[in-house]
Length: 233
Image 1 (cartoon, rainbow, N blue to C red):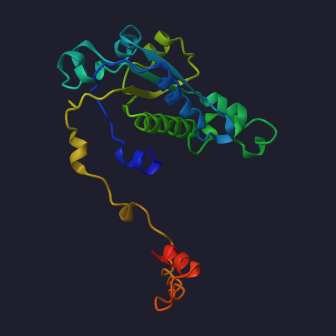
Image 2 (cartoon, rainbow, N blue to C red; image 1 turned 180 degrees about the horizontal axis):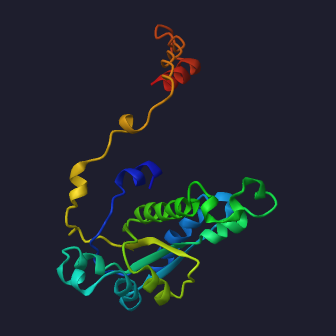
């Protein structure tokens, strides 16, 4: 699928059929995240891939409550996601990278508080977006669930160290078309012209060059006339 088509058609899918994702396809989706930009090539993120109900249950038990599961209209569709990819970021990896000789002058190697922007979150977001796009590219649906509760419980369940922060999770699978419409979707999206501006106006488009004269149609047919007709047809 063309990249422009992937971007145009990507949307959050929150209701899944439950059909398993082939390992070859899943590997391709998760591997796409490795191409994400990373500050200083610190690569301070990791993903834990949970496949099948026994594994994904660990995620749901840590990050949701029984009351929510009993009352949320989204729960049945979300629970059928055959794959949950929990994404974690490690601020310490960035601090350590920027304490190395080629980066130490930045002053960012003294600790997380030295960073004006926590780029571990930015890089984790890059990785998540590439997974979302890769899922669309192979004909599957995906959505991102943020970190709202259960971070320490999830780290414990997945054996992730306390030095890492839980960013959120990517759910991947075949959509079943039963998504509950999101209230946010009714807001629509901003027109690019209202979100992006240029400091100066772009120059007017230049006029295209005039085409060369068409071959004469009055002369008898020749190889030259035939070639010209083919070019300008």
